[in-house]
Length: 180
Image: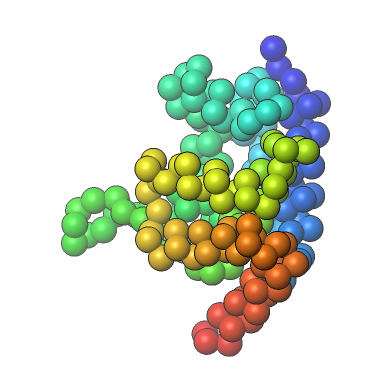
């Protein structure tokens, strides 16, 4: 049974939360653009069809169909997903992860925190996004430096809280911008 209104509410709540986090991280423009593709028909229709409210509808679509058409569309359009950063390496002749630019690592952090808050609700703790990240490690094809950067931010969130972590990200982004 399709749940278009509930799906719309969930993705909109998530986007607003990511925007607030991106503002705190010093990347407000990325927060404004975040996940706009979720409102496209290619992503919205499967999202509404497989909506559960407790986890991503992509997981349910994957379980039902063997793949997620919405995810395939989404990851190819949103640079804050490490899956976007896979490319053919002419030396090894294999598809391999590419190191993500810091601004997208920062947005990925904001996205993961907001997703944990959205799906866990009152069960959310500052450790939740880190636990999710660690549990997915065996299945993840991410550049090692990108993985280390994200894990450092998620660990900082767990150990020092949002205020210090967002302050660190703002500083990290300023220092990264000056080096270019």
